[in-house]
Image 1 (cartoon, one colour):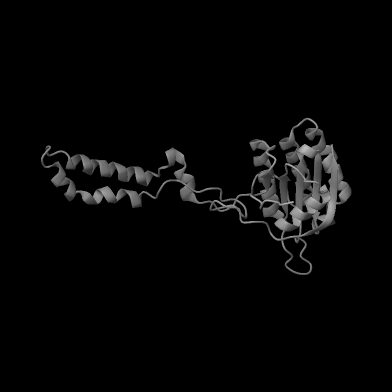
Image 2 (tube, rainbow, N blue to C red; image 1 turned 60 degrees about the horizontal axis):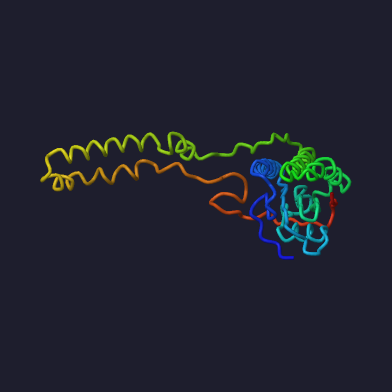
Length: 252
């Protein structure tokens, strides 16, 4: 079974997760990673192609390297990755746990999360909300283990003031607007002397045509600059953790 490379925390290869649920899952997973180093990743597949769900879940967890690589003996945050895999066409679900995650989420607890938070929604065809509810319940286990409050929002990180300012007022900074006004003032003066001399005068005021644009500070851009692998338009991968086959699978 060929598994595509990951694109982020949510890898919806079966196209069953709605945008709202995807956004909620991403916020929760990003918060868990920032506060604990753990990684919760979702994947939906069109088919298992004859393979068992347990084999495929473990394959993805290892190939993608979900969870942080160990930094040495006693690293309590190592290998704390969790994969939530759903195959809607075959009615299969699997929660795959990393080596470190096994120390605070047992197979029985993973099975409870599956049965209470995910399967009821799946039976109604509501895959996005069901997966989001499962991720939320898993994240609560991380919060209990690492002693943080799960807020459901990404923790504040240093922001780019220029990007935030640039997004207000249609994307232009105040300095840019002022320089544009100066530019138009000189432009109108350059055209004010009649038709024949207009082109000759424009050369005398060539400077202001160029000045406003570099001074204006640019347009408010930026992409998603949040956690970890995002930023600059691409996904940078997971932490390189591993797992040994622990978890809970089932069907509905």
